[in-house]
Image 1 (cartoon, rainbow, N blue to C red):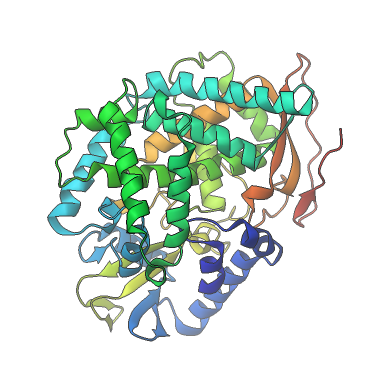
Image 2 (spheres, helix red, strand yellow):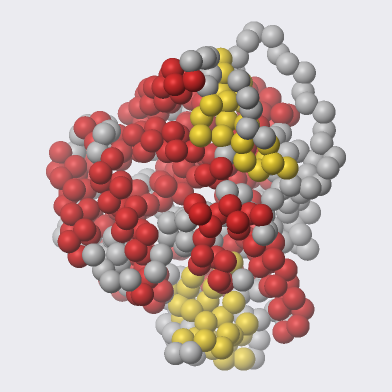
Length: 452
């Protein structure tokens, strides 16, 4: 169960592994192994025999809630493994901080990211930036293909995505600073190996200095301006916090891309999205509940955080058995997000669950973690991703042209290689096409690349 997760890349996905992982259904096999462990050993947590470490797999939903609600004491987010990995590019990030450092950094992150506020103050800048970059991106694709619409693959989308993210986070001047994101990617690749890879001190310093340079400019309307308005002390280490925001935005881009696959394979849901967008002024900040729910469902079905980790700061009791201080508890996200024994629609696309409260309050559904340690940037990410989806879909048709499809009426694949997905987004014609017939085949589908 753990080996395929590590092979895919905990901090930075390895594209060469994602394809074979999907074909082998490694996430479904991992879930089956955890189900067998729960049947054989009880609800756990299940302590593993690992030399020099105390590691326990969490198998019960109530235990997930206990761990998350008990952060940062007695269950600290700053585990040994997480500190070793994230220190490669954010040595003073809030996720790997403890004590008073964590308290100050957490409070500052919640303030600047405007936690629990659906529309962040940077929205007046974010919306036109997103619409401009999406228009440019689709124009480049159409020009490259020599036809209206054109085929958009992951590599092209990622370029446009990062242009928009850099402008939103760092300012318009950072639009073409691809070198900064490339450097972050290289350091994240090192982070996949945690303490088994030496720290690139010079590269890390270059990254943090580069971020500091954009923060010093504090371009109006950007998140960098909000950072400076938040008057960060030296103890806050603002550059490390921003490095983590950029890291999180990579996962957000993956969620957008997989959400497109869900909507392409579910025509009725796509019609509902078009209804939500109809008549709205998309040049101004909008909450867009259905698109936000679509992104949440994308992350539920295919978690971008493969495992949630907590480390106990004291000895703890679990149903009469003791776990020593320093135990790392592992919550495998996909196991709980796709638990068909407790979730009736575990392998189906059901965004309504996030709208009617079923999934929002469900135990152990943790697309943005939970408890006091939940992601403070959740609402900003959902604001950004829903705005990008609205810009892509408002006036265009959507068809998936490559990669494993997420088709209505099927059991959706447990592992979805986002790098293999491609889409055609063409200007919509006034006439509304008839909905596609419901697909009854439960096998995973691979869409053949369209010709012409």
